[in-house]
Length: 442
Image (cartoon, rainbow, N blue to C red; front, side, top):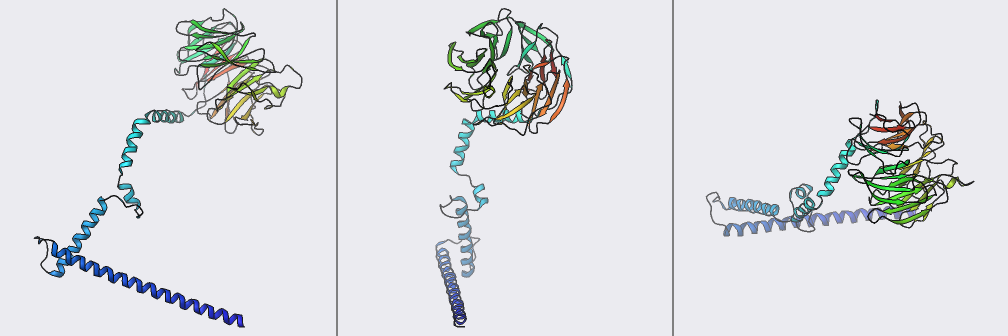
């Protein structure tokens, strides 16, 4: 009971204290209002005595005081609008938007002068995004000019109709993909079979052959610029995407070399423990080289895929793909941090481009067949579709997000080998088969 009584008395005292505080605050507010009225009256009297009589000003003193107050209010409002904001004072959002500051004008001038190149790049990027990939509908065959299987196809980087083909008959050809005709024939390796080829610049190509050489040639002059000699057959080529003067070559002796095209000398040598180098790719960071090789030793299937440091030439990881299959083709995704490997187990595997390069065991592209052939695949410019050749003469198109097959096109009666997606169009794909035929799927 004492505690209950004490609780009631404490609540009553708290109510009295709060009422006293409210009274004090009300008295302070009334006194401040009175002071402001007195100051306004004094200010109006002083202004009325100092301001000269105008034809619009009234003669009554009360009216004149009100007139002066209105003038002072309008003048103060004009001054407040024109003046710069005071630091620490609250400024509404509307005033902050409508009142430009000198620093804003300076920053816009520097942006327009310094970031023009970035704006151009962004415009190009937007155009690439608007170019959505679509499924091809029909197939057109080019005239048969090669006598042996075509193992490599590459579209030109800036010309959407120029196609490069390399064949085991020892020749490379330039094609007009629009008019469906051969433009030029290049015999750079003296009739020896060519295993790989790709564009390096607008007028130069790099090819590798069974004469133990990798050649850099000028297409316009049909002339060899530089020759890189190896101890074994050259089986793979890759140009660094960030530096066109750096080219990687792989041979049958499980060795990889990086060459400087300006000097013609070796920069690094990457010595592996597997078989021949099947394919190579530069990961998205630009500092890591992915290489696929054959298996020549027992219980060495974990070394079929290796990641090397480009500058250090040290193996970063060699236990990426533990399954007992070789991967004849590897490629990185154009936008995602992923790379893909064509497996001889009749499927395409997805890996992460970041350490420890984990394999995605939930998603696979598995409708086509490989059957021990060097079956290749390629991706659309926006990275939404994946096109893979098949050993049964088909071309299978997949959705990159769901790995679901979207369309299958019959192209040839023999095994389809090379595939190249035109990076300037939405649905133009070049396909070659083991019977030396080349077709363009649109």
